[in-house]
Amino acid sequence: MKSSSAARVEKPPLAFMAPEEGFLGLTGKDAFMPEKAKAWVIPFGLEASVSYGSGTVAGPQAIIDASRQVELFDELFWKEAFRDYGVATMEAIKIAKKIPKALEQIDALVEETLLAGKFPLVLGGEHSITPGAIRPFIRRGQKITLLHFDAHADLRDGYDGEKHSHAAALRRCLDYDQVRLVSVGIRNISAGEIPFLEANRKRIEIFWGKDRGRWTAADVAKAVGGGAVYITFDLDGFDGSVMPATGTPEPGGLFWSDVMDIFDSVSALPGMNFVGADVVELAPVPGFHACDFLAARLAYRMLSYAMGLRPPAAK
Image (cartoon, rainbow, N blue to C red):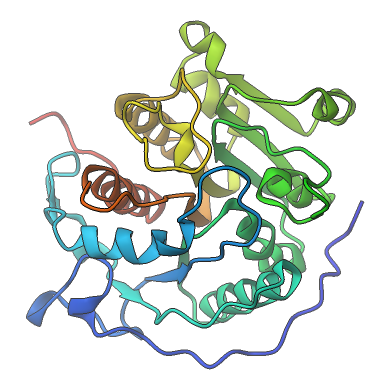
């Protein structure tokens, strides 16, 4: 296992989109400059190891484009939630073709976000980005729980000859001793992943899709348990009827209300500290906007919960 000794990578130049071009399409008095915004959105469309459908390279921009159609007033929080924290969106950078180098790039972008005192929300791209996105937290010696929504366990020790494959994303995160994993909605795991899962039961808890009627959002929250939490949300965690625009769909997935109940239960935990998040594996379908919009609305709602908002009494 690795410790928290991941070396810091070279500082990247940071550039930001104009607010009206960025996440939520904020204009005029609604716009936040980067120094005032408490959340920075990081588009990172890495696509290097997809193994079925492709298109994740276009995911971040599709989410940003769709977010401009998301209503800023959120009926759950009964306010224009973004006003409580503010959002700025980085310009997309040229991503290295080799995954290890790309992981250094996302590491550096998240590191600069944390140094600025901001919350990082990464928009992927394929799931292989997550081990790079959490490295800055590892360097800080934080014990961190990954709240992982997905159809796949992603516990392979590589796939198709690529150690850093999207199919190995959570295995690479667990290379670090201080990481534990709570996975939700899993309904695909290979025989080769089982020995690692069984050897790491103290660090991994899975809420299987097949058992959806037997566990509750409160059970997931209990497993998370508070502390530093990073949310990694692979959009194929949703049922394929809700989210067909992803490269590796699986039947039997989560629905919007399932996810919102989990967000609400976890965010209510005493001492909860959301430290970062990513939304990955959107493969946009031309002319079909529903999935892009769902991903954008998910990102907005996730960000609001992560920034400490709680629903008021029912309206």
